Image (cartoon, rainbow, N blue to C red; front, side, top):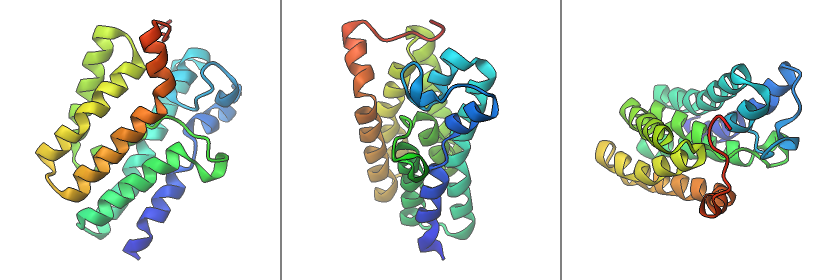
Length: 193
């Protein structure tokens, strides 16, 4: 049973909060608007705060729920790390939406908060401080992703957790490559613009 947890986590991660919220609120599909990214930042730009908050909560919860369920069934770092990674991969490459998903910052936050709430708190603080200083959501997510392996190695010094965090951070940078290019060119949109 516990070996099926990563599969369940992938399926939960494959549920696109942004697309479901947009449909429920009568908004245009986020894959066709703005950055075309089905995530909270894009929804905020064209759908408003309520839609963005609901999307953010959905994306965080689809990281928290499968990992919390796994935690109730096992304390194996290997299974928990695999479950976390599967939920995250589900968000990036969702089965139900043609394998075209979001960038993963909120879902990564959810899985690490479920594994260790202190890691989640450090990630939130890192994102918030960077966002307050720079006003760039993408840069804030990248700074948090860069520091996340250090937080995990400090608070959860297990090869399974640390290696999965490096994979997640690498994928976050990969998914944010267009944002990195825009940041370098000075063309990235700031929060509230």
